[in-house]
Image (cartoon, rainbow, N blue to C red; front, side, top):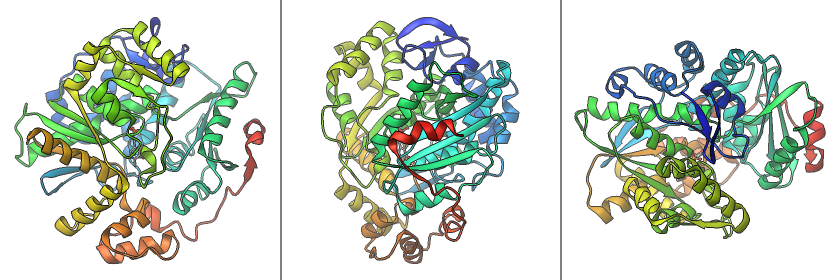
Length: 481
Ligand SMILES: *Cc1c(COP(=O)(O)O)cnc(C)c1O
């Protein structure tokens, strides 16, 4: 099985190389030439770890000993053995993706990626260390640090905007332990940090360095593929509870930013899982809602700051993979991406839009509606959800109202409510005095939901990474590692 860029059928590389490269040489994203035949019914019978092993072995066949890698990635690191439990709340089933070591849904993928990367490196006989370089607006940085710390042959460096992440997110990062980690604040905003990282990649392209640069974001197929598992997990839970029988469709509503999570759901469907509609949920940054309803993707608009910051995004990179999967036309994808770059917008042909709309629906909600939903879900069902999950809930409600389709609905829950205590407190009628740690305590008192151990244990942990640098010094910082 070979991979190639979404923008060109050549060159072809094997799956280990695709994981090592991350981005394809022409700037496109790696996709398999064709998806493998997959025994999805047998996959459904396994534990979460067995599901992961089956899916990852099928998609990344050149990476050996997958079972061992999966075991190493997940054993003992998540709150529950099934990794991503489901809870029935009202008419919907919530798929809790935030039970990992940093209380972020990105833990599912970023626990696995280091194992895949080191195995791919060994398979290719690569001796150089890999340096993972990441700019973060909060959650990704910590989840990546947790996944990569003390992994042999890999180092990791995370930049975050000084004053631009929450108090808890900062505490999570600056207290990170490990012999191969660096964390540094950059004077500027997230875009400055991200541009700085891109510039470092460019500046290092032709340099002799003691390491090879790589990134941990969801353009890497090794980060996307581990996310397919939890769609199977949720489906199986619904079977076990007698809500569906094998073969019945299930709809999924997915709080969406970079389009990685929801694309994993589409890949689950392509592997055979009976997925009905995939509902793309956005906040007030509703580029994707517009795109899925009109076929025009237009990023020429201001980026709004919302209470669901992980969805504050104007360019959803993994959408490119969907365009390729549904059109099979690399030349078309290359042309659309060029247009996006040059003009800031593109429109897909009508037949492609029809294919997109056959699989996906979209809806968005603003902060006020998310707040109303968090409050209502807590009052009616005693369940505390975060603002991202509330956006997923809103889109699920919109879908049911608009279509009357009562197929069982799974709403993906992408963050612990304790990651966004002020917004959640406001929604359930608590006051937001004090710092974030006080807010977490108050939220726990009011709701009776315990604070995840990894967050409550942060206060009093020694700060190890307190540096702040101007953005011009980012390259020097990396070269000094
Ligand atoms: C990253 C993230 C998302 C968006 O996921 P994508 O795969 O980028 O679409 C949604 N919610 C939370 C809390 C996240 O951290």
